[in-house]
Length: 483
Image 1 (cartoon, rainbow, N blue to C red):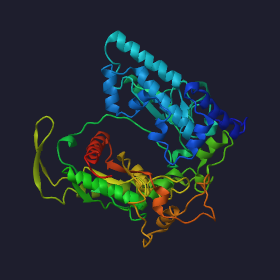
Image 2 (cartoon, rainbow, N blue to C red; image 1 turned 90 degrees about the horizontal axis):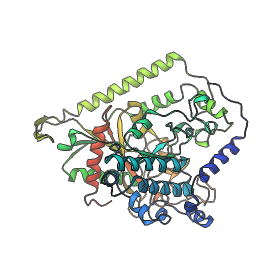
Image 3 (cartoon, rainbow, N blue to C red; image 1 turned 120 degrees about the horizontal axis):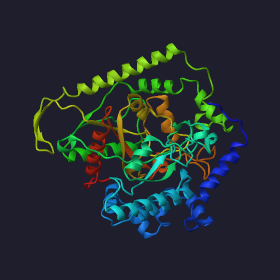
């Protein structure tokens, strides 16, 4: 694809885009300068703080679970317009205090909601199982009439990977599916260049169904990957989950798979196989530089030779086979025979139950401090395997509970960097840079209040199964377990 000549400084183009997003927010939802100044000083923008700017009906709607919202919509206790308005308002406030969206399409969302309400009134039935449910998307999916930049300034005004004459006319398959099910699309969440910097997130909604709902589970627990030890809040979060699922009657066993360092090395090599030429092609569209976190690893270089790439493919397949064999081996460490009945009442007898899913850290720390995400292998190994994953929230870091162990000796260079990164108090406005005058403080002080989650990992093509298991685990966590 031809790279257009740069006709406008990338900073100007990015600034104009930010202004255009702000311009799409109705005046009644705009925050004052003092509101924004107060938000800039907040450690936690969620919960009570953002709710200050929302009316009570909006708070009531956006804090409900997905199933409750869908039920209210289908029973007509809420209209699609009411729900869409609530989520659009919440996203508009969130954008102003945190710059978390690349696109917000309020008018399109409300127009879609009105169409759904009209259809329900006319036909006396919902359009589909997601009738009126607002869904946000990563800025990786094409929506008609909306940019898709994937974090590249050069694609502002276009759709990444789509020919210029088809700009804003293309719709991704998942978008078509969501719309056919009755969903309302209203915004796209922000992404970094390459999607490889891990302090961004998005929400996806899927339905689940699995036979695991009718029998006890056998779950693995990966306490650490042997390279970087999780910080105290994460370790505590893992213990909370293990205690909860055991109290709910499930079995938990230690998980010791093939070394994840192998998976990380192969995965990173695949990401850089083209010598970063694709990334730089996108950057040249606007002239923007690499963001600091990517400057070292994504410098332009020669692509790796074909035979080297082929060898990496074989190494990846070997790792996948080893992991597969290890997973299968977990069925041989039990001789207990037990029976259960599924939801249809059919009886089953199980011998040597295999692990259903694995609980493991998402990252070795509670929250991502910009520029301090030193270890990504907890997720990279799973990406290489193409396994099915759900991430669930567990607790928050607590400076009174998660005390730093000053006797801890790092087990690797990556572990040392990760451990030391949490021991610096940053000056206001300088989260990205360590100050020579900044005092050394405890880990708990730095991460206090930061969210802690775990990932639930199942095998290839087990999306429904892992969603059902995550539901079980989340339910177990809700039954009176201290968090």
